[in-house]
Image 1 (cartoon, rainbow, N blue to C red):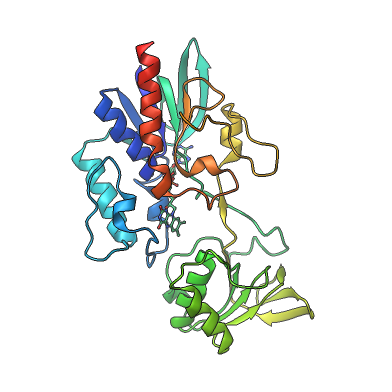
Image 2: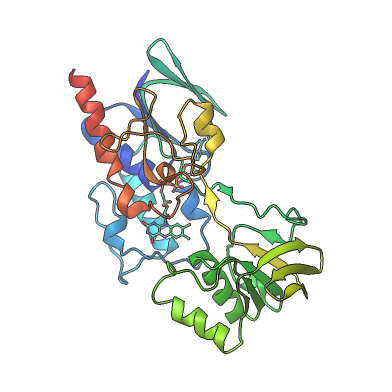
Length: 321
Ligand SMILES: Cc1cc2nc3c(=O)[nH]c(=O)nc-3n(C[C@H](O)[C@H](O)[C@H](O)COP(=O)(O)OP(=O)(O)OC[C@H]3O[C@@H](n4cnc5c(N)ncnc54)[C@H](O)[C@@H]3O)c2cc1C
């Protein structure tokens, strides 16, 4: 029997582990993929918008020679901490269910069964993409995740969306020789796009290097072309790849399955106490970006790493009662 089980080995799961270690509790971190799996699956070219000190966990300095770390820097930092602090990690072990039996939580995974008094759910939002729900979305040329621009050299690429991810994909693939068309639901490039990137994309569209259809949506995808509904009617253009950068969402089915209540306003925000992060299930806590429901832009590493301290404080208080 353990004191705490942490589900998810992302930055915030690790932060919770460090805090649990400091407080002297027995615990394990269960991660369905590799260490910091979401970060590992980010674009290889990705640079964080946060400066390195804002991504630090457990008070360990994150030193980089440039202010904003990239993916490789972050992988190095979190890996170094996990190994140096000997965090008890079980990688490539997915949690399938959590059940309360006789005052204890029983956690079933793809490999084993564990029991603990407290559970911390730090499962993030990067595993499940928001679908377009249009014909042809299941074709292999449609991608919701983007790794690297070189692959798209000399290809006709449609990028759906105007958020940070969409803009990065559009600019990077354009600069590696792709013919890029953006399909944007709104009337302009997203206002939350990084302030140093936004003028770049606006100018590339203005000069015609990247084509953009605003107030438009993708209607159908076929092997060699796509249909775009524009204010001037439906336009069909030749196409090799569709990059549907339409966002990601937490695994709501998993949260519901284990008994965590979700808001019914369409945002599916899980129920938790804002001071302790404890959910409607006693002794089950939420940590990190999973707390945002569909509002995935509200929480980052920067502002959710504090959850680790809040949760451990709450557990310590319960233990003193
Ligand atoms: C392109 C991009 C750029 C970003 N830039 C920044 C930035 O500059 N600054 C910033 O603060 N934030 C940034 N973010 C957000 C930040 O990276 C994420 O918020 C961060 O990963 C959140 O950490 P987390 O530990 O809450 O979730 P995650 O890192 O997503 O970790 C959750 C982990 O849980 C695992 N998991 C899920 N379900 C299960 C299960 N059933 N069993 C076992 N394991 C499971 C997943 O595999 C994953 O490893 C960015 C995000 C993206 C996509």
